[in-house]
Length: 359
Image (cartoon, rainbow, N blue to C red; front, side):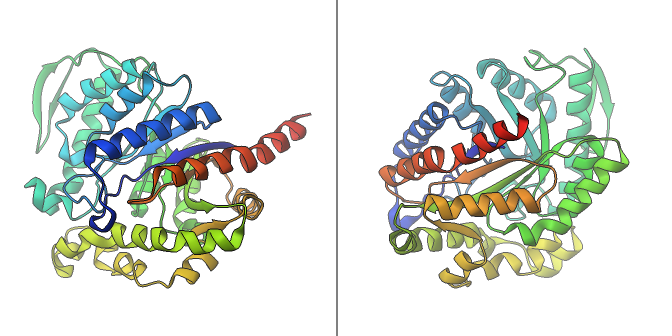
């Protein structure tokens, strides 16, 4: 089993940090994760809503972190494809792959409904822009030069330079809240990333859509499950310490929903999840319920190891568990301790078990 680190880069007003401080803390976390043997570092692309995330340029972060690390891989969960000009973005992805030494992995999605008004893109264009941008990227990776005539993009004889180090392109992933994304990933042979906030039981139906699509098109599933954790050798202390950070994490993830378009418009324009109210409901779930129902894993390393073991058993096709160890405004020493406890007292249990099984 592979293990990764996921960082959301929330920056709430209640425990606000200067932006440069937060970025340098994340770089320190990546360097520590590389030394501890984590397989990957993941973050998202998100704009405008600081309490949710200030991770607006993950490729720049990856390129910087790659200069101080040896083996950890870098994955975006995910790039909001309709916000990018794909002819430009293809070259930017290639540069990031080169500067990370071929350690880049890429996830694509339509993003959150609340980004479109601020991006000056009509909500109803999101699906079409996503599909056209994806087709252009695929052509750019497969061809030396290409032309394209679509509704949103029309180009003649474009040659994208440079080319990525990994050929024909870095590993690709899908995921998110849409059934369509899971079917698409399975059909194309991508991996899927299950981002945090929901327990495994809440996304099993979407993962089965993905597995069925993989089977139908001759692909092997590759599932990355992201899980929020808070560790302490004393489980009672862990439960007490984690509460304000976990509450803030849920509130931060919900906070941009106040600026979403009306429910009727969301339903009409293919953003049914955001119209359902399910996202907003997360902020009202009591803390102990979040822990008991495994929205988050809080406890001692041995308790969390049991949860890891159960997820592995319950999720066919699971290849990686990526843990969220830091929360908006949390002190850096707590984050580094969280990572260290997971790497020293949880990961070896599964690495040794894998080795014994191989023998």
